[in-house]
Length: 328
Image 1: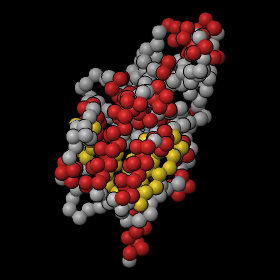
Image 2 (image 1 turned 180 degrees about the horizontal axis):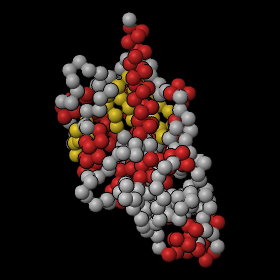
Image 3 (image 1 turned 180 degrees about the vertical axis):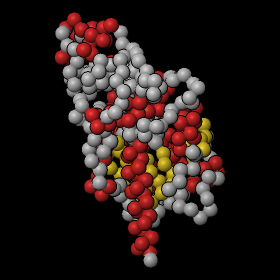
């Protein structure tokens, strides 16, 4: 399987996409993307795959509650734009990944109808990434569609996956202090903590929250009844469990349970990338450019876990092999 090109509106995607994958990057909104731009990358007579992922924040549990209907509708149409491209290009295969909340939305049912009306066999399911050897408690909706026949995502047993813990994922990484950067790997850098947050992380237990602290360390917002429900912030990861779901703000101690299991700091950018199953050699910015935590954190947190992408790819290859074996 050869990845020919990728499309995104964020220009920060270009260097890592082209440098690591050797594929062409198009900086463009899917709303402006025309079929002929995509079709130019397909070799004549090849089996074609179109993969898409609408911004998942739109369908996250938090945003489903917090956003207005008008706000959500502005993002939902991107899935319908992807449907437009599928309908006009008619590739042999389609895949899509998103948060589980999308499955309950009318726009998803519209998308499914578009695929089925175009002659695709469709399967979709919510998967637990940890079951596929990704060191992270992350649940994702995965869709596969094929013109050839029935298709399914390979199971963890079919691919021989083994669960992986934070300890196994971080093995061999150099120790860091907060605010420090590794000389061997510039991406292995940790945010500097304020004096108060340093006291807080020292009082934090692996797998715990701010509720473990003495009252003088608790933030004012969490002392109020309205802030009492946010129990998953200001915590440490556990060595012998998968990590919590990575977000675009994982490099900040106060943004989730993103404290290192043992060291008094938030996890580094490299550690976040490893939890998302990126290879340790993966480069997110040019060597001569300063590292922007916000930009790289966004790339890592928004990414489809690499190993999940591999599972999807292996499922498609197995499907094609099975189909052509039957034809012989």
